[in-house]
Length: 258
Image 1 (cartoon, helix red, strand yellow):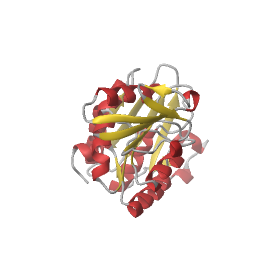
Image 2 (cartoon, helix red, strand yellow):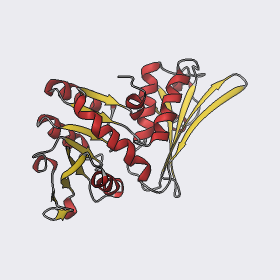
Image 3 (cartoon, rainbow, N blue to C red):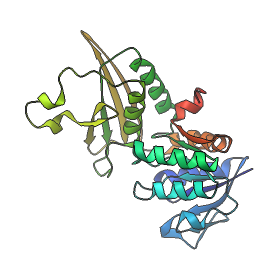
């Protein structure tokens, strides 16, 4: 049985992951991290205020915390030889490169995804295939009005992984734009990403491919419940101890690409 620590255990997604771990026959909740509940007990597992305190007898850390602490948490676990599943958004390509190097140095696995839902993984896989054949694309990132980080982890991961296929072709260079250049969005992975923050959205990510006289849109919409993320997160938790270095994207696991 794999010993699991969930960081962000009392949060929106983390609490659903905790229930998933408790319901699984092959996973055991060894500890949890939640600063608001530190010193308490969560279904028999001690709750700590910091990840570094919570890694005894743990095989996998699952992190659903915040962009302010996730990198520190991941590197602390890797240093201890603990595999990690990263469900928290806000990490950059440079952050992931640092995490990959540290994980390879310690011989442990890290699985990270901007979105651990199965449908989001399929949308990303389809977009990566399309990018091999369609040279023009831009990404629209929708999230709630109060989401602090831009773009969302789902959109950032999609943009950066599409950029690994190739950079999209632009019809007009950005420096030749008339008017506020910010209206063209931010460049991530070579693509323009437009972040919309409005009430009623959870996380929706759309990539639009264009050719003369035709377009292809691939869009994923998340609902108001964290339930869709649990299955993919636990799948990653089972896979992480068998891997070395960073595996980015749930679709990579599902399709056996690495």
